Image (cartoon, rainbow, N blue to C red):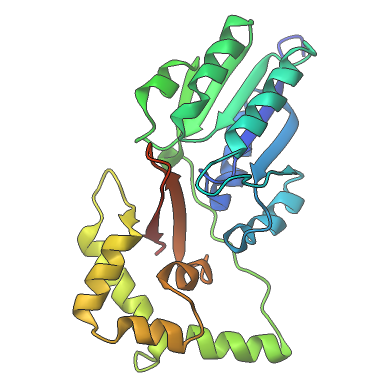
Length: 256
């Protein structure tokens, strides 16, 4: 028991899929006892809704962080402040940062210089600066993805979902047609080392293949393609990334 590490796990919910949470915890638990489990995000956003059940089930503390300015990510700052605060308590000897964002490079360097063992968890496309600033780095692609089945809706909610989702066998349904189209676009535009496709590219391709694409989105009650994809977390993994210009771009991956 003398070698048991006290581990602090910090998760950037805007950079990590909730379907990877259980795999991450299982992987990290092999190194010691995870004393702190925190996930940071703006839980008021609709696309973060699927996290709730997982956070409760896995006993991960949700840390709310609003975006004070549009296009600016405050999550990384909140996570960094908390990590440094726990470092000064001198009771944690291993810090795990789950994110593919290179903004955490200075944090990882500071933790290491202070004597902590640092492990990063992110996608293979994670900038080398962040990877090399950690003592060890685990690729998300090597962690199995858990397939979640949400609680089935009932009553009026079930009726609305049935009208919106359609079925895979009923291709005449407008919603089913859109799912099939987005799957085809994803298969043709995604690359092996980067499975995510720009939403703007998908929208352009969809408009060329289906002239009334935008009308169909709106006829189903959705403002745009992004809001449509957010409604189906079982079918799509939606990511947003802040560019150096400050603009936010969205990507999606079709979940098979």
